[in-house]
Length: 370
Image (spheres, rainbow, N blue to C red):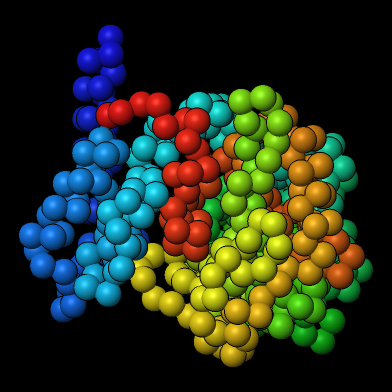
């Protein structure tokens, strides 16, 4: 049975690896960056390091290319490289020890369902004013809207922006932003109205913009910069925070997702200060000692009211018995935190880029050798 399981993982890992390299635009870009690099280590060193990492994890180390370990400027030792968990190992070996992602995806990855879930658990959330489900549009109380009632709902909102998010969207993909102009919300010059929303393909939620804490806005003001907080239930059933990063927009972007080109920086769990004095991208090895748009120096970054924020997240995580391993997206306001969403199968590349690998956070789960 063990041999069959090993064979299954070997085949699955090879198929997944080939698929990502050939069809996933981010992984294709990582491999292309390697091919175009003119500042690589000696090819014998690269082959030796890849071989050592593959032997250690039992699967091909795509993280070697995600984070430019091949670069002549990379100073990590092979032991430090081993701290970076391959995505296959994380999602197929570690994650199932906590949660059944297939059973959970329809719950936590659907923003309409998630809003109902958050309301039931009394989570502090962004103000969702409307939801589109198939061809119907509802207000926050589940009452169906028509052309007039939807227009009345929009006119009663005082938010400068509305975010129209695909209910099943990930990584900031497909988000539309409506801005208030002369008392009317417009998306790229087009008026937001009942017909416009009804004509969108798919399900959506419409949220009012969040006014973030001034200290966080000072880093980058064009997007709401959010904490990505990872909580897990340990073997004793207690919830703990194991990793936190701050994600920021850049280049004028109004969303902060690292997959959309934003920046990420690790946060020290004890102090709330920057884990390192530079931010990075999700992929590659670029370092930013100050924000390229605002000039904010990352060595000065401190999450305001960190101890209170940490305790509040732990309190919410204890209420959340649906997930044992959770990625939280948290906005910080002058009045406390706002839960944007929770994620199962959250991305690990941005976390590992910002924190230098996650292996030590899952030592009790490193039990299977492929």
